[in-house]
Image 1 (cartoon, rainbow, N blue to C red):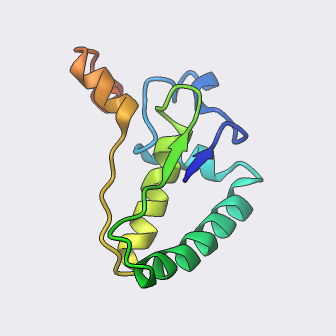
Image 2 (image 1 turned 135 degrees about the vertical axis):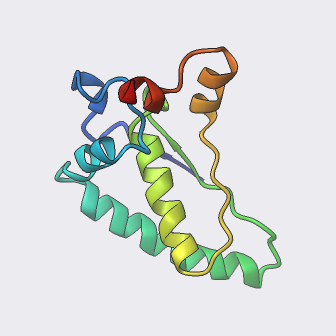
Length: 118
């Protein structure tokens, strides 16, 4: 399943947030502050909580859930982190991967979090 997060307000346009990524508390707060976020997250969480046991009952070993946004740095990362944390808190085994952040790291671009702290 893939979910497009581009409808949420984009932290990229905030100079103080641009260099950070969706794991940073300031970016998370910005994304959560979008008036559409709470309803989206609740509906998403409800659907995943419905689908996970159904997949287990059907003998599926895993369920892949992806989130996308324009650059793969802010909104999708925040949503993936929040969903992953909520599922882990509920006892589900979770593996998180942030493809675009990994690509940045592999090309030698500085880690956004480290840049913001320097």
